[in-house]
View 1: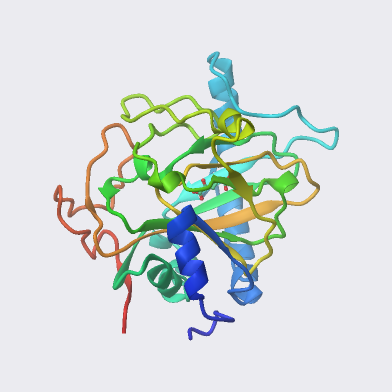
View 2: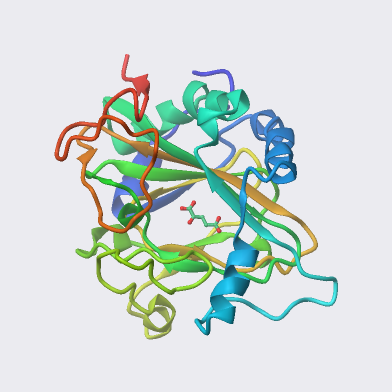
Length: 289
Ligand SMILES: O=C(O)CCC(=O)C(=O)O
């Protein structure tokens, strides 16, 4: 077992992932692994290494489009920062995504013989962040396709529903559609992208047509959702910050598939439609021994 892993993943957890499209693995990682990412995340914020999605939400609202957010709390407004691909520039993020126990956990959960890193992503909602994370499905943002693609959401703080825990639609990974990507703080779709409109899962859940789950988590817990699972998150109305690092991993059968309009990655130099992911673009970070 890799040093940062406190226990093995159980068969039941693997089955839950494939049945529900989401599983919460509790007490899996040494909390020190997450604690050690606090400074690198703070550095990104201080050096503008992450985007200010709250400012983007303001710009979208100013253009007359709807932004998913709450009223500003009396204690003041916080910001939602997000960024991707920090592993390319920062050793700490490379170690976290490529050399920790996380790739092996993805391999075990997805029943894969190898794991590629697609991207890492920082998702930081300060206390008082009013923006929700709009309901979306990850796959529409990724220029790839396959049955074994997942996101591991790793909290650096204690996270509760009021601080912006991610909410997942149980079983939606089995729904047939690919949904059109949106701007994350607004359900406004990214122009030029393709796909079906994300269904109104809140209303569906009120009618008993689907189930939404969320998990209170601590550093060391990890939620893993399938790339087709619909998910979103609330604002951070708590007095705590909500920092997380998401890792997107791809397994055996993943191939390149260009999705018009979705943001491309400048470091992907070896894209061949329908071909397996290239190790230079999406490094192989784990192989079954
Ligand atoms: O942290 C959030 O607010 C959203 C997370 C998410 O959508 C993801 O990691 O795929």
